Image (tube, rainbow, N blue to C red; front, top):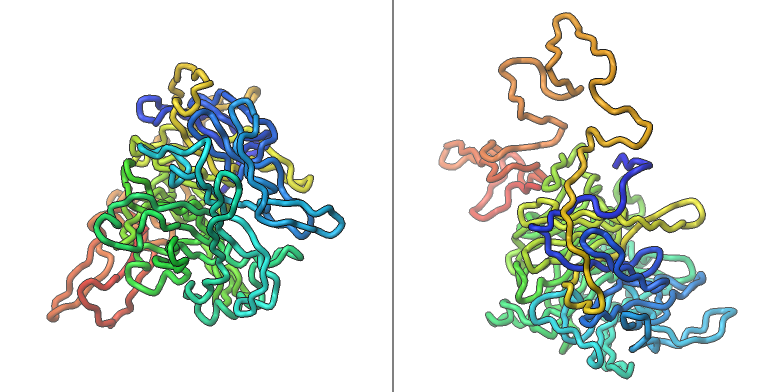
Amino acid sequence: MGYPTVFPTGVLVYNKEKAYNGYTIYPSAKGALLIDMNGNEVNLWAGLGGFPNKILPGGYVMGTTGERGGKYAYQDQLDLVQVDYDGNIVWKFDHTELIADPGKEPTWQARQHHDYQREGNTVGYYYPGGETKTDSGNTIILTHENVYNHEISDKKLIDDKIIEVDWEGNILWSWRASDHFEEFDFDEAAKNVLFRNPGLHGEAGGDWMHINCVSVLGENKWYDAGDERFHPDNLIFDARNANILAIISKKTGEIVWQIGPDFSKTKELRKLGWIIGQHHFHMIPKGLPGEGNLLVFDNGGEGGYGNPNPSAPTGNNNAHRDYSRVLEFDPITLEIIWQYTPLEAGNLLFTDASKFYSSYISSAQRLPNGNTLITEGSDGHLIEVTPEHEIVWEYVNPYFKNIGGNFKMNMVYRAYRTPYEWVPQATHAEEVSIEPLDVETFRVPGASKGAGTGKVTVVAGVDPNRSSVTGMNGDDEDSDEERLDFCVASVKKGDAVLVLEAMKMENEICAAQDGVIASVEVAVGDMVEGGDVLATMN
């Protein structure tokens, strides 16, 4: 994305009148970090890991004290703990499995990864009525279990397992992904690829699904209307390696709602578009704007299993896209209600789509004022955007970690915004709005002051006030100055997209909004019926 070597960190933009003001917690290289709206560090739980970190009412924070290392481990956390504001552990779970790695003493470990939810709150972030229990209650935890399932592969699998534990750490309920292989609707090509390489990570095994979130549906309008698939106790999750998003019946363990892995099967899915490598799939809780809709960070990058193609010669990670989307959509119709993509960020898809792109991790949280807090995780970039896509808060993680001695990363797995009252121990400073810098004139010390400081030469026959960009519009007075042609079908509202022949009459099908044609689902001469998807737009 043309990432500079020098760039500002901390809070870059802040409109205190339009933002949802509170604290933000995220897992930094220094530990679990709580900041205010101006980026002031309120509390650092030094060294406390987070996969993710979450704030609970009363200033409690959840995280982990360490990670299982070695060649037999993959993203396993040793434990899941709840600590108070002063760092005292008040709850701990580490009894998923007794691990005996070669050369090490056997130890009980949680094997937690990616997500968990404490009773009283369905999603782990603030919403009206979501009163997370802090001294009692059950906890839903996403864990790992190694299995062999020859229906899937002859290789050892890193299987995803969801458990529910009580306050004392007793396992009350469990669900294992491999037990439901046939329900996931893999086609034969995908099954063939999976069998040969189920997302292998050396001796640790095959991370065939890579489930990266789990939450409870909670009260919702769909169940109130009689749709049993959306029972408040049911669990929602996504599997990034398989491009699957689904809902589990808590009562039976069966998959009762699913989209993916094939997003071309129906016209509704084709219109929604391929969701690839996604994270943080959940239902917006009751009491928040958009309640009942589904919210997901659609990473792009790569994911899925299927027929080989030039980008995936073995069929592993056979779906690709080099930009991200945040999608809010209706779980019944699959209609997109709201989205944030490179287009909404003010970028052309063909040229600058990667300016909004995180190929892994990341998240989206709906805020009480209707804004959305987005974690563009790979670059440690947090933004709060309004429903109209205006950025009203922007933050870049200033803490970097060396990976393998050669790479520096400031990644943020997932960030959460929480109301001030959830952390009564802290006194937040008065918020001060921060105007965005003018990037055309911003310079580091010692650099040129910018335009107009050098000699200006006027070329004979050339208007010195004419703007010029190679490959853009010509000089013809009749040319459309708004036209952008980058070898993609960029269209404006009202532009003709297709011509439909009916009763020997040609009828133009026009774009309903500005955008870019993502796909054309018909060919010249095809017969179509009312309701058929003819083309899709981003």
